[in-house]
Image 1 (tube, rainbow over the protein chains, first blue to last red):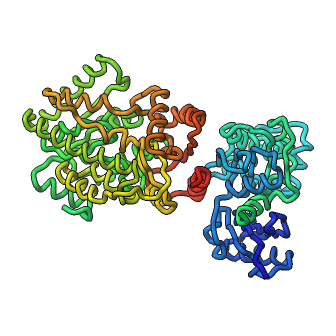
Image 2: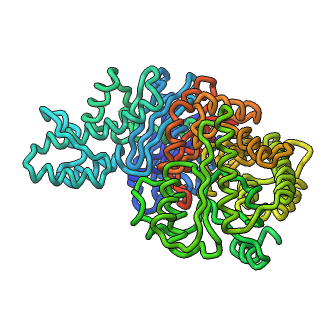
Length: 258
Length: 362
């Protein structure tokens, strides 16, 4: 049997995704697992699950590209590429008209300008700190005793946003504690946190510029509060794939197929 | 003396041979003058010290070059030097000079060198020459009279040294030097503490690495203050990327312009300073810096520019947005990374660098 399938594995700080495509770049299957403390094992688990869903044996995979912060730990990879290039390729595959990709992952966020052929033109990425990333929202949800998946909806319900002056996650957490103590409504604090994260992302957007249609990728794209505020800033509707976490892995698989 | 000798052993030997050592902070200073006094300048850029005591004297937004330099003195690890020289490179270094001179009892003399910022026109040249004279006067008070014939000899040595460096930079530009980025910049940085004739011997050795056919590698321009942390260089080596030209303050911005053959030695030194390329620490016009970077990129057939910025380096940070926009408008991609001089590269910085290399393609 020919080995004409391709895999992409995106090892992120919170989750690891694997995607399998055929030689026509059609998505056959995907999986999402927690990364945990062993990136290598998470990559293996994600790949096995995706293969199982596609009903393919391992030897039908011609090439694997690993991406994400844990890409170096993927022993099965034939090649490693950055998540910036892979998100660009994935977004280009899903939305050919898109020229700007905003990716908000667990540990970092990036804004990518892509050319007509999906090539990277420019990009900006957050610094070491967790401000403007999924981790920021995760920590705040925990502090406010709200489920992470409910955070965005609560932000939309608030009539106004409490101003959060710190974008540093550690300082913002202290600020939130003070705001709670001052009896500010929780939904207004949550909206304030969303405004803070979107402002942080907006700085990166301005570095690269807004070019054509914009796609939002990464787990934070599932947060309607962030989406809503970003769309207000951009004055356009964001293109969002139904499983926004897998766009990087999809891009890796697409690049493996080339 | 071989390349495997440690810096401290070398300095100890120099001192034992009767030479005086001067701890010199970055970046522009007339080294020929010091050599003529039989003084070895020992440059203090990135001492490998853990910052602890310096934090009591400096604000948190001061760069790690200044912080590390002060820490070195506070920890008593600069005991070998006979004094300090502070060129007027930026406000932070100027403040460091005040702290060391006015508030620390080091027992060693401090010298200052206020080179001009606006480097166009005759008044600037006169000011520079005046500063040279003042520095000589101050040095004579501590180290005896200068011998003008000796200074002339040092200028000739300097001409030889910088000619060789120019040849090496030229070979690097063409891909005709069989040496990694890491090894090249390690050798370049030995100029920060070697006596010039010893350094010339090392450069001669390096010139034997010349090859006939250009090596296959993609090229970039590296801009900033220092090629630190060294992991940047090894990462580029790993990806077979050659730094074909640099715009580093401790690289080509100051290391390629030799004194002229003017009869007056101070005029010869002045000529070299005024021939240097534009620099953020000299308040050069951004348009000039942009033109220089574009020329470096085109001449070296580089695919882009990497700005490696030391955190809180204000002179560099001020120019960046316009430099990047200007490069972009002429189709030259660029990347900015902010690093600390003695910290390992974070995963994010590695990703940025690798993404940039993927962006500039084959």
